[in-house]
Image 1 (cartoon, rainbow, N blue to C red):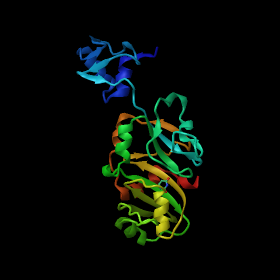
Image 2: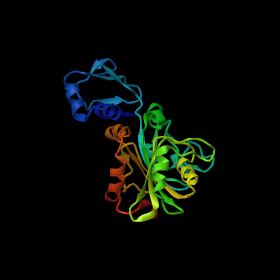
Image 3: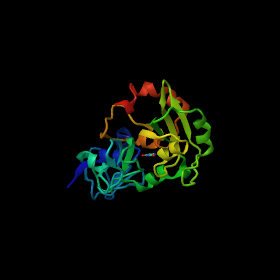
Image 4: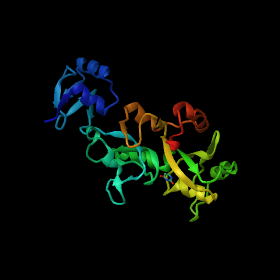
Length: 259
Ligand code: URA
């Protein structure tokens, strides 16, 4: 049976810190299977225990939020249909039932991919209604043109007539064929189709951020890290696009698309 400490169980599933849990326990505010437990290092069966803290039930299954730096050649789906699923890259200690990629990156796209078993959160992140910005860097076949800024902001009309929500785009300093793009939605092949609508072509694409969560430079291609509660909350914050682009090279020592 998977016995774990009560404070570990609660902290992995709620916003409470270990010290708050310890204090709540000694105040008699934690119950396990109906009994008050005053020691936060008490061991419980994580599969069956019915735990409450301050009158609220702690859900049994922890949600997992994994940030992957997706490498080229893997598919953002749960099955290996058109290639190997990104789930194959999740290390055993992070694996749990029901994981799926929250959002799509094309097989040849790179970068930030959230993998979770929390369907409600994934829906919130993906719904254009919630305006969660995603920032990409792209390598273009032809130099960036300043007219793209207005065109993207007015809403690009894709080849099939579909109209995109306003998006921001900015060239990368000292690299005339590199750009940053910020989208608030996720249509199929959207960035690639937006640039082909302005007669350019995306050669490489990498997602660098989802909401306020920025892919850390130290996370190599194919690597995963678990997000903490504060990072998960940060998914819903909005970085300032101009500041993000201007500060990009203080976060990243080199252009990740040149690696
Ligand atoms: N836009 C694309 O064209 N491809 C991606 O993978 C993500 C956004």
